[in-house]
Amino acid sequence: MPNDRTTPRVPEGLDTTAGIRELFRQFGPSYRWWVTFTSMLGSFASLLTGTIINVAIPDVMGALGMTPDDAQWLSTGFLAATTVTMLLAAWAIETFGMARTYIASMGIFLVGSVMGGVADSGDALIVSRLVQGAGSGLMTPVSMLIVFQVFPMHRRGTAMGIYSVGVVLAPALGPALGGWLIDHLSWRYVFFVAVPFAMISIPLALLFMPAREADARSPRFDWTGVVLLSVFLVTMLTALSNGERQGWGSDLIALLGFAALTSGIAFVYWEAYARDPMFNLALFRNRRFVAASVVTFVIGFGLYGSTYIVPLFLQTIQGLIATDSGLLMLPAGLVMAVVFPIAGRMSDALAPRNIIIAGVLLFGASSLLFGAVDANTPFASMVIWIVIGRIGLGLVFPCLNVTALRPLPLDLLAQGSGAINFLRQLGGAFGVNLLTIFLDQRTSFHVDALTQMQSPASSAARELLERTLPIYHHAGVPELFANIASMRVLGSMLYSQGSMMAFRDTFLIVAAVFFLCLIPAWFMDNRPPTRQ
Image (cartoon, rainbow, N blue to C red; front, top):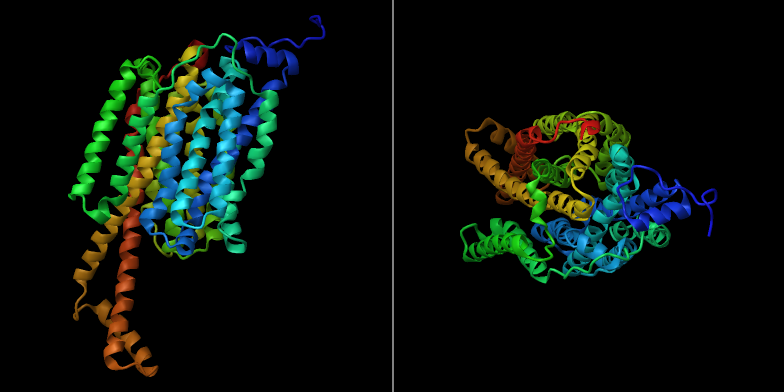
């Protein structure tokens, strides 16, 4: 047996498991960086596919004949599946260990990626996104948990900042890379592009992820909780996705809403009394965790919602190609990569609440600036606005994760990691759906209002008709058809104007939500880490 001179010592101050301590003895102090890199690689792969799809949606709709409501499920389906499996991470870790859980999640993710790349119908593509989301959701809490356990408490902010650099590069590079792949190859490559990163992470996990603890208990799988949560998410998201088309007062939407409400209440009740709950409500006895949870939900709402509608605005209103709309997001993502480690270091030295409030204000201000956007807004101005918002998120994320998990004991860290990621994804799922609904409703409102303002006496309408009618007449188009064509041009212009005004309203709603988020943020813990 090696003596103390040949066996690397375990760093002091770690609140971790025996398996991780043994890996420190095997690989030395550099182990924490190897396992952090492994975690970052898996997160990068899953998040790359999670965000790259947004710029591909218009091409996917055209290639597979999907409606906007169907295409919306490419984002919300992924988020819904991710949301459910995130809460299963704690059970999987205790039952199988971190290594097997991580490898299984990457395997599921790879299957979903290949399914998406070869999908020949919209339904098959949605199923592939569900499979991808299931793998991604299981992996994310594992990655966060391992990073927390290989760094001492006073360096966890720094750890989350470094870990988040890899995580944020995926959303930063995803839209730009996806746009290039779509414009030069095919939308199918947005599913294949993450496969190499996932495949590399699997052998690294075999080396650096800890196996199941010898004394770990074997909790029962919460089948009832899984079913109730799945029913809640599917019925709620289906109701939100179809309410505009079916009518909010229709029997189908009423039935779906009742099912969602009933299953949601039943899920909370069951988790309160279950022996081995997938969503441990004991976490919410901690006031600091509750405040962080509310802020996390709102952050997810704004982040995923805005990430969905910004590329949509650029391609539908400003007419940019997928590559250009992706490039708009790239500088902001790179700025976030710089801000994350700085914010992580700050959270180890300063009161986290003030940093989070500053970040929320910046993101709200960014959305407020987008409230004045139009078809002629300069590209450079929008880049600056997005950079401002992403600096805010860069300040929020490392501090928020640390603030939420820092007060939890070791035995609740896995549950806490799953819960905080669950709430962020749940906020994202609601954000994409609710903002899409709001955008559709405001578009109809503005188009109707603009249409009612048009009349033969309207100078703008008369001027347009005077310009277009001679063109059709010169081309030999009969008078009747020339009038119809001119009216269609007018209708198209009115729709574009109404849609632009609806996007403005939507960005203002995001700003309002973030400014309201300052209230729960104020109740978050405000003590410096050294005094906790």
